[in-house]
Figure 1 (cartoon, rainbow, N blue to C red):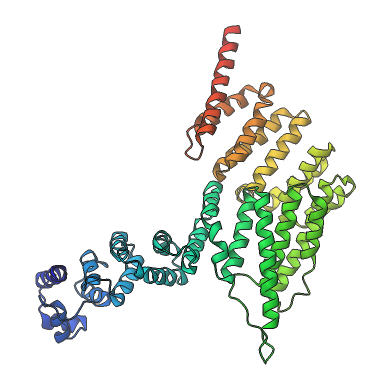
Figure 2 (figure 1 turned 90 degrees about the horizontal axis):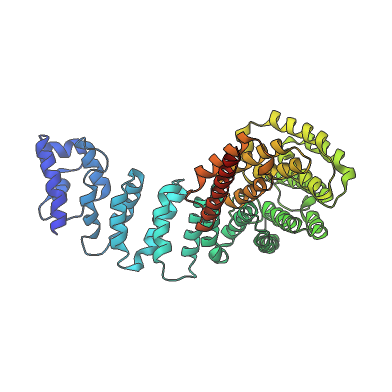
Length: 481
């Protein structure tokens, strides 16, 4: 009870300091005198709500959130958290970024894990209002304290944390996938669809073709089940109930086939990939398509054409190069990915692509700024890696080295250190043939990133050895001179 007295004592002091008595304060705050008296009494007969506290602060011209640290105890007057006070208080603290108050309340609530459902309610309410960042501390609390590992509440919390964690940093994305993946099949079906789609996108960016294929298989199977159930669950008026998902069901169905086709392609299983391309090439048969879904179906049709060209190129069908080049010129948004495929095929089968490179590179630069191209992440890195290989094989060492540098710098921005190491290895294969300025640039780059926090110890040791080798080479040349 002493805590209840503390906040009331501070409020009365503030009222007195600003010249208020109960009567004139009640009039200005629109809280009745009798109500105010019972709220602020040394022996209060009723608890103070956070709304009333905000009203008092507003009348006293105090900053928002004043007395909140003292109000924490008001939430536990009976020794246990009181729902009618705790939930509004936590929502208000989240709104005002009162992190310390949130931590205090959650810590005391988790002394009894039966209240974890209330924490989840707060998280979901914040999330529904679009306050994603502010909801995370509550989802983390659920994830940490939920006793039942197969509970839907825990799975949804892990899903929300997973989605919030995704960004351009590939290593952080990898960690997010590792944490979320075990919970994917415990989610409600609508979240399962979205979760599998996001997992597939991340596995693609991580070049994890095995996991991409497995996610695709799960997504295809689930989308088929949902579609069949929707067709059976028809109302008397002929309307079909549907799940609340981020995208139309046709997107999950088509993306499942697309992801599986890509997984096979990246593993060199081109004939198997072709079979799955057919699975999304024409989805016009899908029932219940709205305008957006119809556009998605058209996009899948375009993807199927582009990916069929990709397979032909990777299978060495050089005769379609001119036709494919024209297709890319007509669809400039596909140029970057198309260039990666063309250069990779040229490196594999040894044919010349100078004219194609000139046309498509010029068009790509015309259509997009450099920073927009770099924002495509992995594709931009793969483009410069394959281009460097092509240039080096064709005797254009300095141009090839420049392409490697572009890849290395961009991989640091994307935090993609698997490709960074590939780029380092490629430069090491040609470093004796590059210019002095490129040698210096290489050394400076290694010095700059040798202690990068995202490198593991083996990577740092590898770079240290490379630098040591450069020092010895420089010392050797100095002795000769």
